[in-house]
Image (cartoon, rainbow, N blue to C red; front, side, top):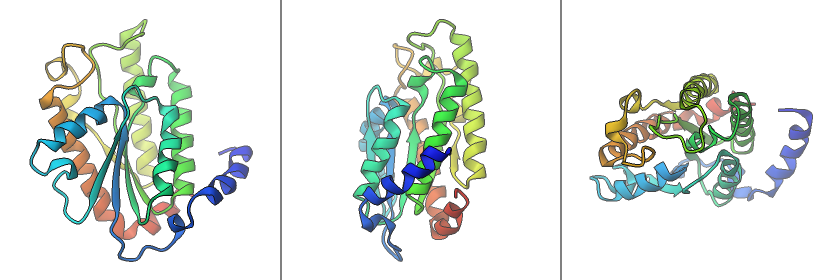
Length: 226
């Protein structure tokens, strides 16, 4: 973060409810899954699957915030809003960025993503962050060069995965959705079929499971962000 961002952080942090900064002890963690329309539809799919919207986890509440058309610039305020009302440690799953690929350059989008994650980790140290990689699409609306967008997607996924792992975050790779995934997309070439959503949900479930396993050491993990 630059000097201006560092100066701003204490002001933002001071605006968050004091409960967010307490030591939680045995308080039950909360899980939030935040993202664009993939998450909106994944929640609806989860509700009719075994395990429901809680993804089969016991003693943990899984909350969903899927916003159709969500762009990355909405992630930071959404996360701050969620964390203001938090009463315990958090697992934050982020699935976003796909809607930005045709709007921003690769370098610009990567810079914004990394900066926001750093800021959020500073603000909310008792949080384990889970990055859900951007899934390929058959159609990228507004793209002049679909192959170029695909190269950008792969580069952003690789750079963000490295960035998150270096900072003790969890990375979810949706291997079965990579490559030619047209059979797993709806007719619009953008959104996932029921089977595609099942694969996405399985990956998110694995990511949450990993995050909960390290939750006991969250204080040590999050100090590495600072």
